[in-house]
Length: 305
Image (cartoon, rainbow, N blue to C red; front, side, top):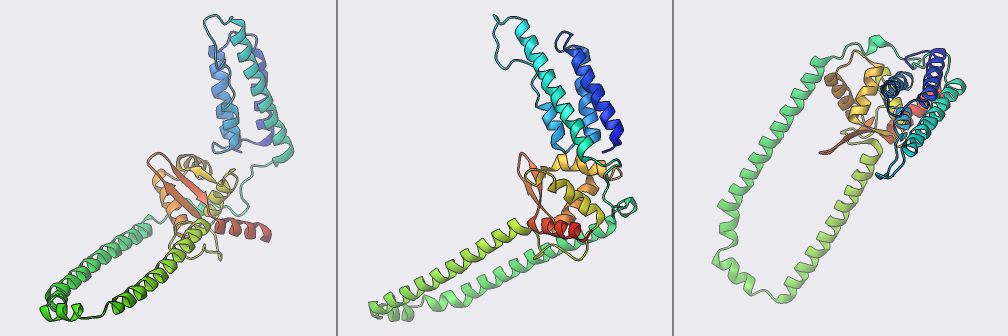
């Protein structure tokens, strides 16, 4: 929370009282718009923008879903008042939650120190990026050279010797049983190859689901940075252990106001490399999910406390 416990309770109870007053006024008045926006801002500051609390409040419907020109004015007004009743109940539930479960002080991780995350060594990250790009370019160049060498050997030595008249004559004289035997051996070899290829693919897929797309075999377990731990704790609180990239960025900015979008992106890529998170991107949405390895790591860290 960015406000203390008593302030949060007082401010939420004030919004509940305003909601009760709005029932006596015409629906969707300017006072209603102000109350709704003020309440959303308050919820973001109490529970942070990535929590389910804000979605619960925004899901309240204050209007009829279906109505016609013959619908009396009293019916939409009743739907509006019913929506305010539901909003009051949700806000009251927030108050009870804060009273029962939230400590008096702001719940910051004990081992979190702002000085650890004030500055990111961007020069080191850039050097690593340059080194990776150079390796990719060298690998591509090497592949091209090898392919050219193979093509040269085939054209200059293999094909001229393979398709000369004496070889063709020799092949036509071989008994058919030997061809059948060779095809059988080939099919057996192909089956064995496909089996191990499929097995390896399934193993890699299971590993990716377990530790995320990463070049490491498992997440580092010897040490975890406080900022990494704080970001992982954001994800572990979600129902499906993942968040849209934009929502996670909002949450990270709440924890680390000094971070900009570039630094957040670098931080997430670093966590992906370590096997802590799995980043899935599509044309419509980019999501960040905590990996099973990172979940086990968080569990071990909490057990040590």
